[in-house]
Image (cartoon, rainbow, N blue to C red; front, side, top):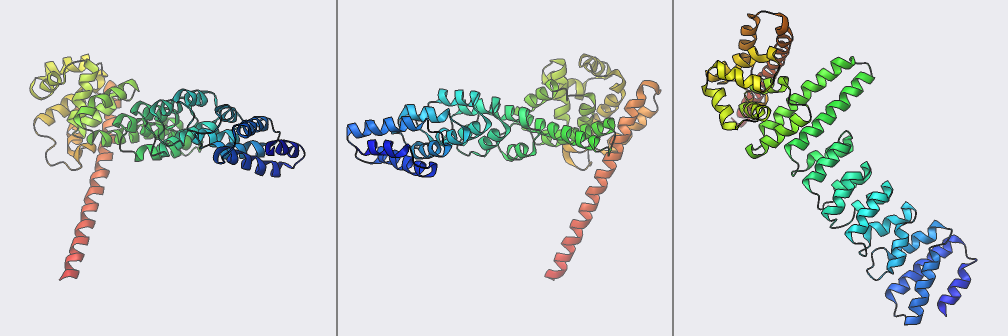
Length: 390
């Protein structure tokens, strides 16, 4: 009887009042002790309200039913297919959906619908994977900020590949402790590309110069990441660099001249498909003939061989001893030695190599100067603190 009066009244009531009444009807269905006939009539009325012309009414219905396991499934499914602002609360909260329903909604829904799904508590891995694969940037950001979502490592990688050029996505990704070094390298490369494009667009540098600066910055960041990478993750990182076209002769030479022998040897093992033990034996113990054969098998540019040969020779003699900066910074004395030896060679094809080594030498000198100044400042602070304590 009450439902009949409701249906008669709702035909002429204003939209705002219809929305309030719809919410009351839905709550009565969920929480009141209705007779079977009244419950069936209330469900029929809510089904009819799915066709109400006002979004306010349908949103009120969605808000009231969204989180309830007792909501009529047919109504919940219909609301989930409605306008994004109506579907959002249902997609975010309803316990009636199975994983396959949510995956399908991600694949066919709008960005707002995807974001609503990404916010769900205890979001399962399969749904997170769907969002990572086809979701909008907004939904991926919501997913990353959802502490209860179960996100597989490959989904993290996919988000980085698709949206890593966006600062809003990069920041939460880099803040995570569970992302692989290869993913961090991907994000650094995305950032470098973005900065290079921005600088070239503003005409602060020409495009080629901007790309070179960005590439060198990316190489430096890669070495910093590699220096902190556990041994078990080094080969996947190297493989990622190779697949992405970042495992260049310049990066490998930078690694060697920075004292990151692990990255250098793993890179040669990746390029030659040789066991790392064999590569390490050639690098540390063999003569130049075996080294040249290893270099040729790695298919590195022949013009860069003199620099590698001299750097390895210096390394065998303990050339990294006493050099500051760890395995992430170029070693100035090592570079100067290699540069001097290479300058004694005939020019021609070596000229690009000499140019690169001179840039390395300049960078190393500046880094060494920064370290020296930092040490002076630290010593001055220590002296001041000791004076105050006395």
